[in-house]
Length: 520
Image (cartoon, rainbow, N blue to C red; front, side, top):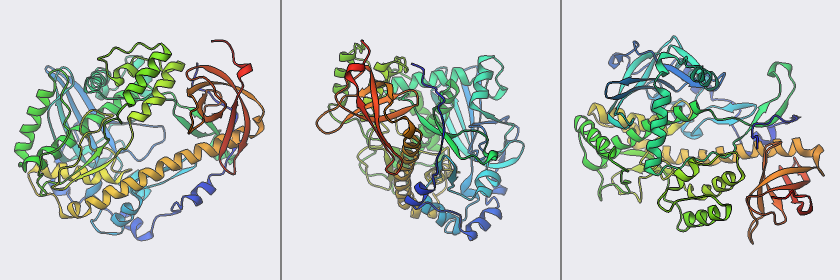
């Protein structure tokens, strides 16, 4: 089943969605002025690392460039440099920009534009890691062994200079043609090893079709037409994601080691190296909780996810058996899913059901109390957001904590005072972001499908109906995830009929056409 499909477009106005969610139409002028006049508060303390040939990888046209990387093979493994925009250096604590970013939490994306966390003069210019410009950064240095497991890592304030702005499709084409930029020559091997390391930890990566709403035709034409697509995910997406995940895991380890021991920066680095080296032996045991009484002088901010609910994996195993998918008793859910062809009905069903394993993501503040868990179950390790501070508030706080720990200095008071509010802002904005994305997709689906009411479609049944909810289906052309009336059989390819499509309520209704379903 081919999942990347272009469909007929339709005019869609997202203004009603903006109004419904009360999205800000502009940035306060005093905050914009602060962003325009921003200066690097740590200009005199930075190490000059402009010699590192860093590059960025982002979607085409992106200007808010948070990360720049360089990864190379060494005689003992790999060396990774990962530069992250140093937003804390250009935002005045307690100032207009700080207050407004706290109210927003994160950048919100709509098909026709974005609601930025920071004024675009900052996020797309002054603080963005644009090519051929000197920029302040938090520079992570991560040394890895032959299995791409971290042995030593550190983070420090540095002055960096990106060499090129690359995009995923371009880097994938270069990888396929064996002509990668020198800064990325080791990325394919590194990324594959890190993916395997994740499977050893029990990480789960879902590859469900990800719907996107994209403009149909150039924006300059003034035609406000939109289409639904399922964007192809490249291997480069996966490799680049592993760089960010590794950095977030190192950040979490720094914060946990400090919080649990009250260690100095030097001791933290040593304990991190010892912990990482130990983790390379077989499958590392998960860290479930901090010490009974953490040190409140060493706060932290983790991205956490609780273990899967009791019985969820057993339910998945029953589904796999019913679908004829071989799942050895000792194999993790993540490894089983990784071995499936994502374009098959069985894979779609199992990945859809696996979402039940990955619920309850939140932000956990380390403040002297022992949390219920510090683990992120989808990653299989403690984890912290530190790689997207231009777009996500939590990263500014977590990065500043890591910088302080590594330097052996006290965590700034503004971080301690604002940590709880920052975590709450992230929880609130995460919920808004998810609802906003769904609303835009639902509006586009229902608008595009209006003229096709009464039409039959081929669909894969992701979940059968039960007493509390209707069945859920995936239609590849156009790419639609929807509820379906009737009792279509789970894991089967069936025919469904579009009974209703209502843009006013952003709903579509399909009905199972049992008599029209092809055999098998």
